[in-house]
Image 1 (cartoon, rainbow, N blue to C red):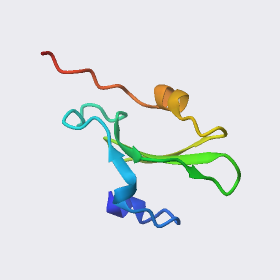
Image 2: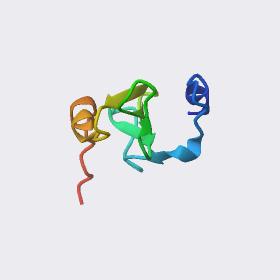
Image 3: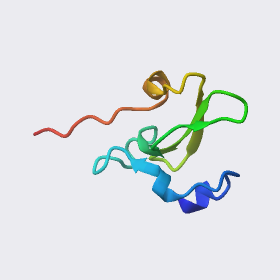
Length: 85
């Protein structure tokens, strides 16, 4: 993750991210979230931004005018099913 984040001009640190799908993330779910920024950042262009890291190692920056990323997450990520109990 450090290598991917080094390319962002904002000098992000790993501590600013929260892990998602802990214990369930893996190569079988490439478009599932692995980690995301804990808090959205104000964009220099107005609105808000948040960085998402997927299980396949790709990184995306999402933008939302109102700072609510719920709809973006629903349409841009895969939900990993809960394991059978």
